[in-house]
Length: 379
Ligand SMILES: Cc1cc2nc3c(=O)[nH]c(=O)nc-3n(C[C@H](O)[C@H](O)[C@H](O)COP(=O)(O)OP(=O)(O)OC[C@H]3O[C@@H](n4cnc5c(N)ncnc54)[C@H](O)[C@@H]3O)c2cc1C
Image (cartoon, rainbow, N blue to C red):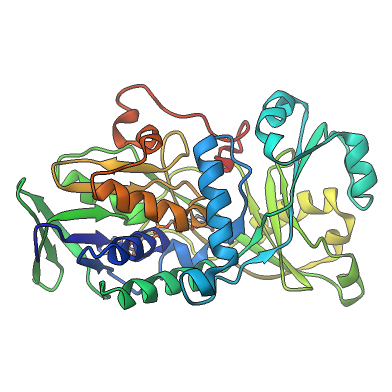
């Protein structure tokens, strides 16, 4: 391939969104995916879409990405599954000052406001809340398929069942060796391999402190008589340590907000256990008693690729190799606009605000702030 060509390792939503933005700029692009498109953590994400971020740049990226997800068929093609529900964030007293800053783009609610607006919620101990009108949920699998197809329409090549086993950056080009012995040469390489990114980058001498964490999603289904009382919006209960989103009229999904211990990304339990469901369901029922009568439905576990500050790791790691990983459980809804920033980075014209996410920040002692207390996943 030519000097200006780009190879991408990984067809998760970040890899295919970057491929789309590169291909539509006319850059010859090839994506290497060891499984199938969106077959990794992207396809297991909960799909919560929100722009309530403590990091100003990410708040803007999330806001603009939400607009793309809401108009996906026209702007990209395919079905993102976006449903605008609004989002409610509930915090304890420790977060009051930070919430007043972060919530300024949204509606900050006192306990009295919350009680008047959300009479069905048990608000014990809640000191402050935020309502985000444009939040909702989308389908990460469908979104990634849409980006992959759009990238292909713009001329990108997507190779599935193509595992990258060795990368070599000789300063003039990057040589990519696949598991079947095939050899590819590209001008630059983007590694967007989620939890498997670290070992690939080590091959070009970059030691990034990324870890993999197993996180669960528990699905619950309401009793038929309770369906009219179902919570119709995204609820991020920072105070009690879980998030929830509706999934159709009678179901909802729950997941934890706190970090977990690192795990081996090639050897972890993909089912949610009864104890994990119980932990989440108990907290949800304390907040919304109707949820206490719901029963466990489908659930699963997958992987977050986590950076030390729970913010994305995006930048250059060697002469011709770049990384976009470390999205720490909150990267799906950023991908539409982040992919454009990655394409600009590879074109040598990055937005200066991207620099704060550079892989070198940890060694330089410039880790970023993120989230609220243990809920660093809020970014
Ligand atoms: C349970 C769960 C819930 C989540 N909920 C949300 C949410 O509600 N909202 C939100 O915004 N985000 C959420 N996320 C986070 C979101 O899913 C991720 O931030 C995002 O999907 C990361 O996309 P990615 O493309 O960087 O990586 P991935 O989806 O991990 O894709 C990486 C790809 O690289 C491939 N690969 C790896 N190694 C190689 C190799 N050597 N050669 C070729 N291919 C390789 C893999 O097969 C994989 O397909 C959630 C994640 C999980 C696990």
